[in-house]
Image 1 (cartoon, rainbow, N blue to C red):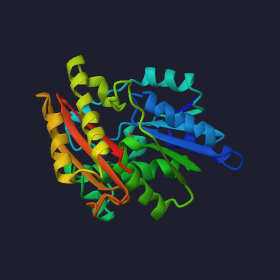
Image 2 (cartoon, helix red, strand yellow):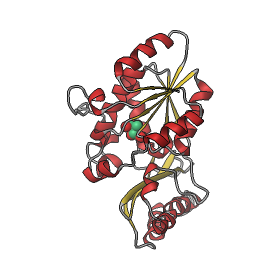
Image 3 (tube, rainbow, N blue to C red):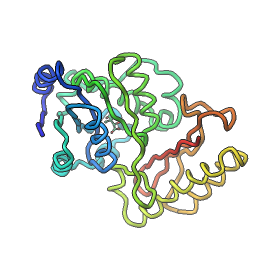
Length: 278
Ligand code: PAF
């Protein structure tokens, strides 16, 4: 695996390979787990060269302690990438990514930035849009691979690609779960055993909605799902709702392609999860 830390060095490499090789790109913030590895595997299936970036992007954190406590495990990450056949790692500094100081997207991306994560983490997607656009500009991939766990991020990145990078093909890959059902996340590393066990209720609540969707009154179904999570004193729901899976607007009826999305605080950690309903 070749490792780059500067934009200049990576750009020179990209100029060399791009004419003859297809480039697959997996952007990450590190603390890699099997979910990330599944994205690398998907990239390897579709592309000649797979590039993974590890950069904890300060502009997408709206909470200073979340940024401070975000796990940084570069040695372990490099080992995992090497073992799983990643070709290139890009691991830049903040100065390399933001040579003109920290900036955020100011373009209007409409309603999708104002609901769910957009509503509860103001400015988060403006940070994501900025860093993903910068990474796309540097890496110039043919295809890029994102996880469905950050479902709203996938919608936002699809819109970024439509507006500014129509040449890039977006692949959204399924959520990887532990045997218990817990969605894999770098943040799970910060859960103790009791928190991890209570966090399983999140997936159970989402599954409960999936099993009753289209059969039971939706408001009642959501209320009952919330009660499942509220059984634990360690969990506190930020949102749990069903939305149109294309644009995250409220659904009109159960024939709409729908998704249930949740953000739940578990002890000190904020977890998100989702399941497509039909
Ligand atoms: O999903 C993530 O890990 C981040 O939001 C991303 C896409 C790497 C941008 O920092």
